[in-house]
Length: 193
Image 1 (cartoon, rainbow, N blue to C red):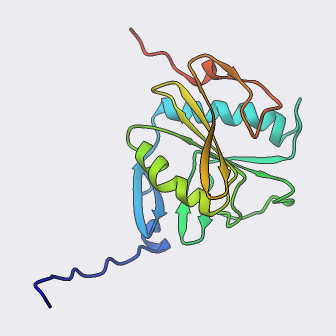
Image 2 (image 1 turned 30 degrees about the vertical axis):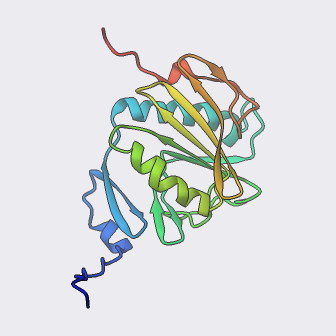
Image 3 (image 1 turned 90 degrees about the vertical axis):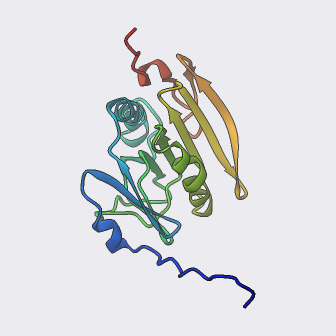
């Protein structure tokens, strides 16, 4: 050898390693590594809740909208070797005709929504987006409550395309849920001045 020092191979984390993470953290298995994040702050949780309610009525329950979807908060997704927990995910009922009675899904969703925070924005953008692309998730929403921005991404081939970016108090129709309007002002909590 010419002076090179080999480092020991890093052990790939397992589902058991996920189970060993304390319950007060959100644990994911990303590219063979356990990533533990703090539970979302209220601003983050509220944005996810408003999106879930806004889409759940017309799309999941079919109330005043087209129906045809299952919309879930924080589902556990087993996408190949990766275990991810997006803030929201949705499956078209054609893809998942029967709602399963399971703790996690191995069927990739058609849409996911990640609510960005300073602690998770890099993970969501840099590490999780490629996994969603490999799993053929067709649409991703990235929502940043701090900046008051909704980015709508569509998978084309193996690459993400920014379809639209909306900010502040816009009222939008965002794919794949373009049949209804979503008032972004409802997602944001004003900072006290």
